[in-house]
View 1 (cartoon, rainbow, N blue to C red):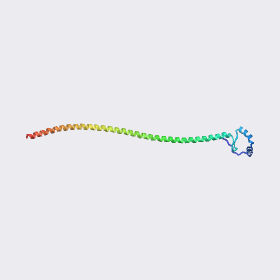
View 2 (cartoon, one colour):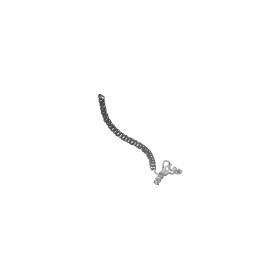
View 3 (cartoon, rainbow, N blue to C red):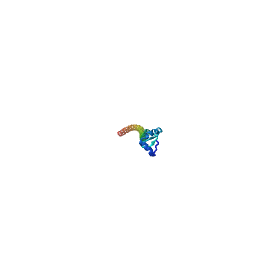
View 4 (cartoon, one colour):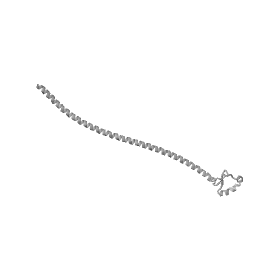
Length: 154
């Protein structure tokens, strides 16, 4: 928007104030020149200038709102990134705990197999001791009988 800021000469100001400009405004308007409320010569029509100013203000408001929106979205993205990192950390902890449980289960299973093997070994040893006991009991009984017969013979 072009604006001539130089003050108008007194003769033009007088013409404006006395109403002689009514005749002069039409030729100026036809040439694309207009006077604003401060009697400054303008190239744009006052309505177009006003709408341009309003559009400029709306654009500034829109840019401000977009800027605020970008800040909000940026904050939201940061929050989502933080939550994703926390979720990934918790996921890794859960995987670690699951693997630990699997290893503990495997250790228990191996320990159970070792204990079952030990029980089987002890059962076999018990059976050997039982057989040995029976054999020794039989020998003892035979020896006691021999001793009794020996004493009776004397």
